[in-house]
Image (cartoon, rainbow, N blue to C red; front, side):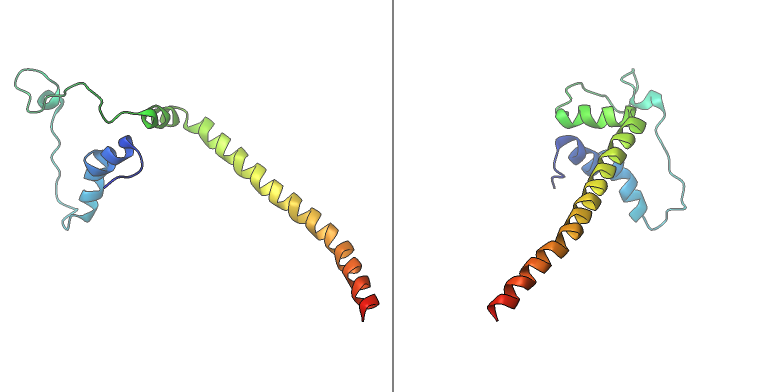
Length: 116
């Protein structure tokens, strides 16, 4: 299954989000969960898991997601400003439409009165 970008696809299909979602579906959520210690996945002698460099699933989206994680407050401000501009524009356009509507309606009324 693809979730749009490489990074998000890996996170939701095999990464931490996958584990979190699967744990939520687990019938005995109150049971204990064991987490491997850092020595068991740190590329040291005797570790169970070895990390290989490559980042084959990193693409343009990785940089954006990491930036958003590091600049959450700024991102929130940008989104809030964007939403504010959109809402203000809609209100302004609606106000202009309502102001213009009586003129259009009265003009249309005059045309109908003359043609009947």
